[in-house]
Length: 382
Ligand code: GLA
Image: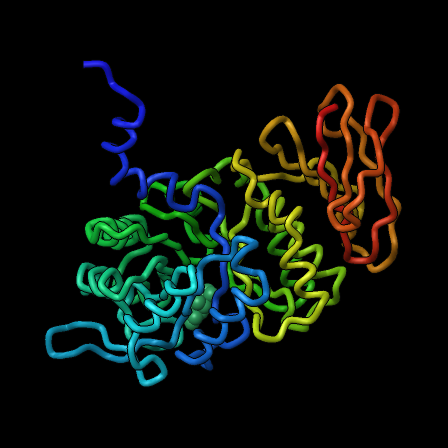
């Protein structure tokens, strides 16, 4: 029998959803934790869902609406997980989110308690996975928290795989997000444990010092572990939460795009100012993050407080970021040699939205980069 491509695809279809098709590019959406923490409830999630559509976020690719910690109550007599009174009907909420063309995420811990002290999934993994699937959940963030009390550190890969297997057994494609702060080089085993993404560090804060340390310093040497279906996660976005200025938030977004990081907005989408939406909705920067080659970028040059990063893109294009970590303007430049390239490239500035340069031998690109800011360009071969 001669195999026809559509037939093969149809046969593979079911399982393909669990491979690189799920999170083929870094997941995009929103998460409640960074701004709302415990103050998240059904009405807020519905309001955010509406705003995701109205603001253009949904159209720009932000599809997951994720409820973080603090939704859990205890369990019923049969051990089924219960929602607390902030979330009276999770199935109805999921239906609402789905009715707007979006997907919904939830949070738990492999330990007895979550980080905020709510009910975890310990000894109820399969049961919880089934409940999530029955509710229509599309994404699970699984946060180590109190698991240290009941497991050894060396159990971690198996503990995560247990929940991944339970999710797969439900038959519903559910993105699986590992959150254990980068312990034990999670990037080396996260994909084998079924992770579509794994946090690489502790929690981000809405401060330049926190964002820049996580983004510039703590992602070194791990780019090779990311790819379609399994991503390094430097934590959720703080853009729009007020602790950084516009140049710093542009740096945050540009750096996360260079890192092929999940883009989970953490602000109040219902009340975005113009600067915030111009950052989160910059389609050209989103396109870098979501590039189908799925290759994470890395730092190629560091001189004092300035850093040049590159990321290879599909069709032999590249993204290059000139980052200034100092508190003064800096003149920066890069040449073809810095990137180990030959030929000629068109250079497009992705924040000024301008094609304004041709890069070639003996003609480096230079720019003045604002304090804590970035000039991000896309290079297209001529
Ligand atoms: C941990 C995680 C955070 C958040 C909180 C919730 O600190 O790293 O992202 O989920 O728990 O309690």
